[in-house]
Amino acid sequence: MTTSIFLAGASRGVGREIALSLTKQGHHVIALLRSEASRAELEAIGASVVIGDAMVPDDLKRGLGQSEKPIDVVISTIGGLPQDGIKPDYPGNKNLIDAAVAKDVKKFILVTSIGTGNSVSALSPQTLAVLQPVLIEKDKAEQHLINSGLTYTIVRPGGLKSEPATGNGVLTEDIRIIGTIHRADVADLVCRTLDTRADNKILSAVDKNMLFGQFEFGIFDLS
Image 1 (tube, rainbow, N blue to C red):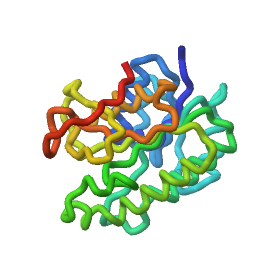
Image 2: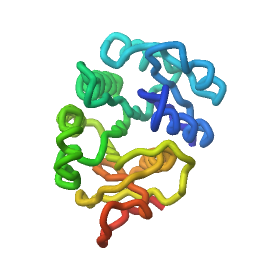
Image 3: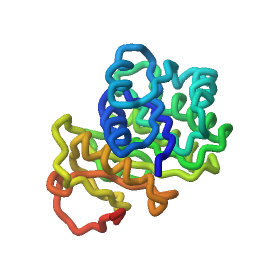
């Protein structure tokens, strides 16, 4: 079944990989871009493009209203870097969540990172010292989504690598897990959380062969 999906963060990284995966699966993807730079590439794979900024609520209202049919799912990979002044992780995602509520969207999938919220203990003190400003903003976004009334899935990837998919990416509810994962594998896992079994779940995403430390943990089954 074709699903209508509004995707924020599709210009690069995990968001770009999600767009590729969704369009290959035949879903209708509307990609929110802040500039025209990536329009041609996204349109070439079959995505529709809306130019706008998640930090501007009116842009989101306009963007979500451009679809000919109701939006089924919103996916957000919006995020900033520790050195950024104004980080979009909370305000941009808050605007997007609020817009999704107003449009009666069925589900919202938010990509944050391991170390957010109750997974903070998975990080080393050194890593936490670097990432804490961003993680605080990501946690606020997660909490806003959880309290929004929307059906949600939150995916928290480990350290990201820009290499071809390994096929070894897994999801887990175990908040102790830490490791790395390729962006293409994160995208595959995010797309699989369209399944209702992932509704209202918070899941960490790692490559099972690239863990930091070895211990038994439960894999969240979406097969």
